Amino acid sequence: MPLPLAASKINTLHMDTDDLSREAYDGILIEVEKLTHDLTLHYGLLSDDCENENEYIEKAEKLTREIMKSEDYELDDLFWGNPPDKESLNFTLKQILENIEKIKSIPIEKRKFDF
Image 1 (cartoon, rainbow, N blue to C red):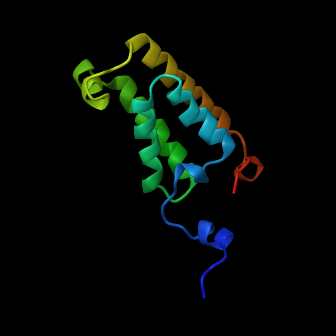
Image 2: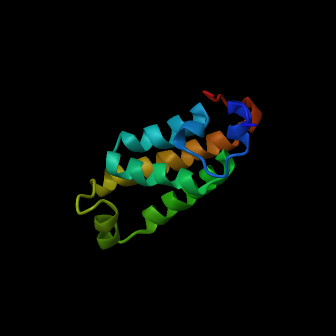
C-alpha cells in the first residue's frame, strides 16, 4: 500500500529545494538569485544529494566557502564564461554565510515548511 504524501516526504532519500524551510530557501536560494540565476542552479542542485535540510545547509556553506577561495579561471568555469562582478559576488557570498548562521540558530521544528 502506498505511503501517504507526508510519510513519503519523511522517508525520501533525496531532497528537492521545495523541501527546504522558508528560512533556508529565502536565505540561500533567493539571496543568490538576486545576483545571478547561474549560481542559483548550483545551489539548487545541492539538494538532490541531501537527505535533510541540515545536510543541505552544510553543503551550501561548504560551496559558499569554496567559491570565495576560487581563482578567476575557476569562477569563469563556474559561471559558464560569464562570471558576475567579483565585488558583488563576494558581497552575496558573505550574505549567504550570515544567513546560514541565522538559519542554524533556529531549531528545525521552529522553521516554516510549505508542505
